[in-house]
Length: 172
Image (cartoon, rainbow, N blue to C red; front, side, top):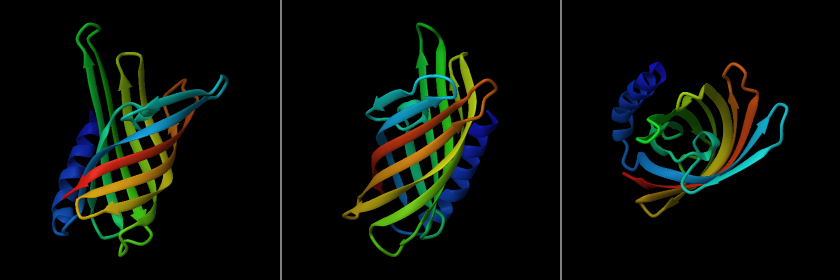
């Protein structure tokens, strides 16, 4: 719950900064492939459309530009099953730096940290980073290609995750 509160506070704090620039908020989702690499087992492949949350579970993102180069991006997933009364939640805060913010298209690097709860079975902090390329399509859309690494930080977890993603969002 503390992570959710932190994500909300940071998102609200970033919004006024981003609103000062035209075209500085992007809301979207991504599709991806995740390679889950456990410490002592076989690699598992997950494919999802949409999805680039942990194990490529569906999620949405909202990117705010605090400066022309600095991206602040909360990513959220919530799912509840009434039959099992299980809730799945993931909240990730990603920060990124665009190398050529003055151009329409730019490469970027990112680091992220978050929290994942899958019912009562798994709870874990997540941390990682990656690189990507963002394309502006007209004035109203953004497309992305990303490669990310994420480490699961829970007790007893020995899991690394490599994610390849394609995303798209609406720019406001």
